[in-house]
Length: 235
View 1 (cartoon, rainbow, N blue to C red):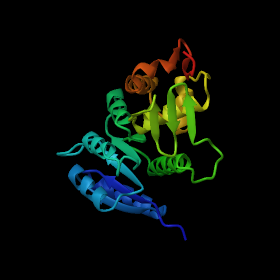
View 2 (tube, rainbow, N blue to C red):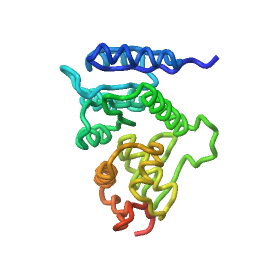
View 3 (cartoon, rainbow, N blue to C red):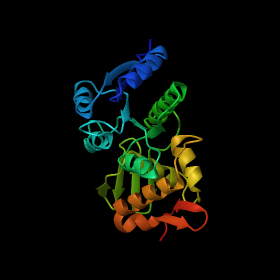
View 4 (cartoon, one colour):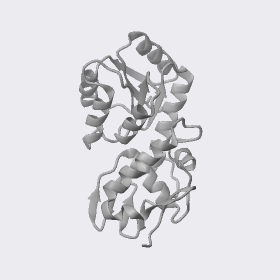
């Protein structure tokens, strides 16, 4: 029998914790709840979950800081994070995505939508890890840029480049279709699923971060004015 996926829920509102725990448990998840960022980090150290539902507005150590600390360490960087926020401003969404969060949901939310988002994130992560036996290449070379999907590694002329989960997903998607031009909406749909409610500006921010980290090779990620972006191996 398949072991239930474990979900750590972090929120300082007890009513929301109880609502999420009830619905996730009913849907077959193993659920642990904590009310502070400090408790979340301690729980992850004791027993890493399959996914974290993380409120951004926490007392003391806020959600963005928790996300940053988790993504900074190799042992926890691969844990998917779904952010909860009472705000809807682009800055909150962009900040979380830049830190490597996988998805977000704005309060108030439907428990059914939350469960669907959690399952979508876990499914994408399983596919990225090759758990569905898909015949996708594990390594792509685009000029001096080498992307290894299994190792979650990017090399530029042999030097390793550290990317967030979202930056890596965008680079992999573009590299999988060399020289094809994709709109911002197509990029969002490809790396996060259809109807993902995030602005086009968030994609632009991810691309800017990706280019900056690639250094002189950031020029291989080209802007096609009025259309979107592409990755080329020729300069």
